[in-house]
View 1: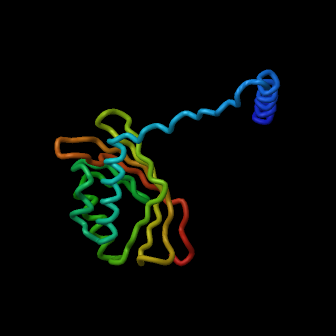
View 2: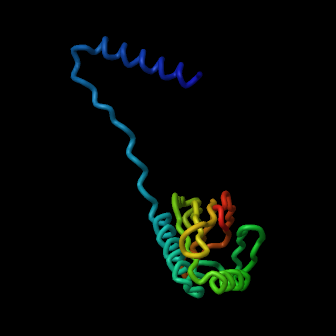
View 3: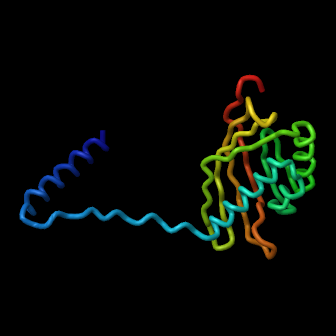
Length: 165
């Protein structure tokens, strides 16, 4: 109801302005410019999507490059701590599901500090490469180290399972 009142008030102000300024040149609405995309956020988005491309090829070692040695990841139903735990988990995944594919939608990266970028995203994982899959949301924290960006924490939650999974 408050929104409706605000819109009515805005309409009334606009109408009053038009009446008062009937002889003036028409006003041109100036909208604020969209914020410039942050270079660090763009770097991390590209880095993140390169990791997904490696995942989709089943290239375990290339996929793991994006993760810090001390990564903390909550994936599906448990915490994984350290790159060796990720190597085991995803190595097993690639063996069990050699055609596994992941699609990322609505990836958003945001610089929090000059050397920290957070991401949030939606994912769709298809164990057989196509067909039924898992759908969910995730977020991560990337830190700029001497060797480049590294993901130090990630959380993924499955929000839906397709029939047939």
